[in-house]
Length: 260
Image 1 (spheres, one colour):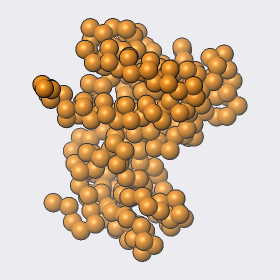
Image 2: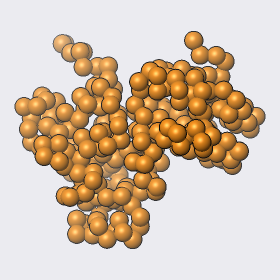
Image 3: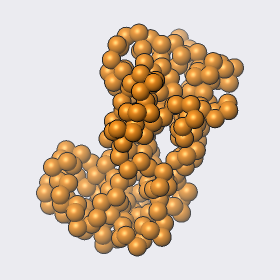
Image 4: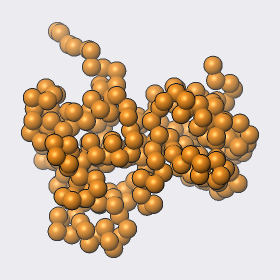
């Protein structure tokens, strides 16, 4: 049972991927992190002695501090934030406990230096699913640029954004797999609910509805969202709720049916 002002790894894993996920700050010493350069999904690195500079950014947000073993560094940082009136707690057992339980960890080298992404405009399925995945599991504050297909590469070059769902790119279709699949694999997100959701996304995005009966519904809703919203970013915000619901269904609602 987690101690006072602590959260267990299993409790935290239940929150990741949902709108209620806390902000996560990894305050491990550099030498510890360099020996094991992975992050818990959506966590970001923050030197222990710089946590105080984030007080204004963390206001009204629940924050979890993470160090190697969940001891002095994370407890000290959490206490400093609580002294400023913030809600802060510690991951029980730190990164070691998280790893021992086999929960997903993201290779730090796979996370773009800048949380800015660019893709083709007028998204439907993959180009809404991927931003949802990035915000819920990789970089919670990521921004997305939607531009004409011919401009994606140049915009990426000029802005430092990472392109996705573009032919030949690292985050794109590979054979029968779509960009959503590529991101799950590339970021090391070996989470059963995501694999189930990926099957539905792939089936809808590649018009292979025999893979998952839910694909027809996802296609219908995705087309409807694109018709409702002329602005791509407004469509993305509306789509976030759609994929939040699909993720919760994939995680713990698949067995539920409905009869009047």
